[in-house]
Image (cartoon, rainbow, N blue to C red; front, side, top):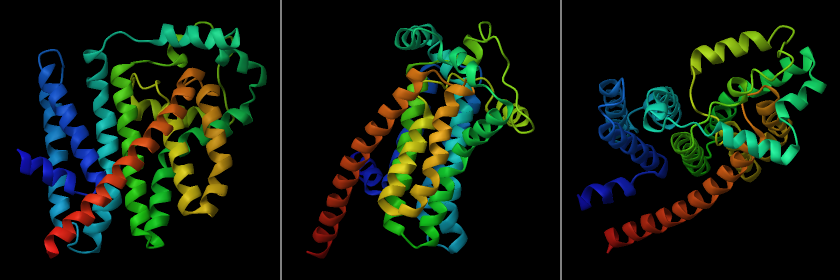
Length: 301
């Protein structure tokens, strides 16, 4: 067992965090096996992802395609597959939504419901723009990773993919601990105006609803956390990309409330998620680098 853990923490941090979270979900599924409606399916998915990750670690340098698949494609598949699986986990493990608490906190801060207050500035063109901005969440991390790889910034890429994956998985842990549907469901009866766009808003909303389903994924705001993490990394490693994405990310964060996906408290928690991710990842990566240097020194001697 000690050798297994030693080997696990010897791997690239991005691989380690992915395997640890998959093992966590596997254990959670086993504990709640009797009440999870698709437990065998979940165990199959998590096991296949773990096996695939181990195989890729072993054969990552067998050709250019294998390396790209290992670096970029598989982490994306893993994140999406895990997110999709949460529909069959969160509500069964933790059935009590915290939306009433989040609604009260928002009301305490603003003296009203922010999504209702934003009806004053609603405009079909603005709705289209912000719905498009909201959907860029799915492309910003990938495009940043592609840019680093194309510029042969291998070390920067490894640090970035680790930090981004850690942020994703911490947000997923938040969904399990603090399940919340969001204002588009909980506050739909008090909204006086429907969100309507000109040409883009409705198709994007319908597509996201089909792809994401109904998940308790409001708290913390992963959109905020991931977008800010990419901004942080871009500022460090690709300053030009930072300035390009800064207005997009700003619109994205605003859209989370305007488009009624999140409470303002979710967004605040998203900022906290970013800070937590940075602190943990910087500490762990520093520890891992020292461990790598020590291993090489011990091997030579």
